[in-house]
Length: 395
Image (cartoon, rainbow, N blue to C red; front, top):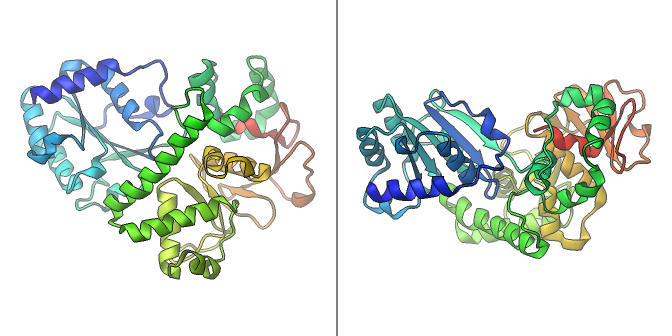
């Protein structure tokens, strides 16, 4: 325990708190059990350490679940010993690497009344389908990729506010005027699209894209294998699938053709697409009002963020797809999306968005109520024409 406490103290003291992800303010500090899910590379470990740093250091213990301590000891034993010496906050990083994690966390929750637990896990993990149901105990949060607003703070030290979707729809002209007094959007927007989704860009694009590719491989080789027990032969097929998707995004899947190309049967292929979505490597959408089942193929697929496009496809990215991916990435954080009969996105079963360049017209959505044109390459919009970059301020 002394070894773990020393290691924890060192990590917590060394973590920088100059930049905090949007989720830092949202987490309920009074909850006894908190889950933070997210894809690799989004900053879950840093967030966990920052949450520890705001507490009294003597009462906090941060532990990475792949620590060698757990080769001879259980998670429950750790919590019990920490609780006996006055521990108040237990931070568990990547619980999906621990067998029987849900059962032991349930016992910790039930047995140690004064101990708060915050744990992180892969986005692939369904915390409510573990061996023990935590749905009535845990408050669950998801940590998404960095928004354009966060990128400006992280890379350029430009601090700007968050705006809701409704605020952007109703007041986008005034908001854009105020924001452009403080920074020039197009000086930074293309940089964000290329290397702004993950908080580890250090000035070298080639190194950044290599890190992104490494992250993809870790998700597929380790997370999928450990959480879903998928054998490496099928993981190789899923890797082929994501590169096929990347070369054709936005991708309208022909399941029969794709199944033959990947050498995998139809049901396994649909499940592989669903796994990629849970891993936050792709976004899948279905047509408006269509019933969704585990065996239904999605109607359209995008990569999960624009950086993945550039990391995988390099110079062959499609501008129209980049625009759609950016909008989808930001809207999907807090809104329900589907594919409308006319237009590009149907938001919350209420609003129609059509995405394009600065010369985009309303031709495709003429006469449709609550419809908007989302335009790239414009700083300030008027009426129902909204600048694309402004949707980077939703969180």
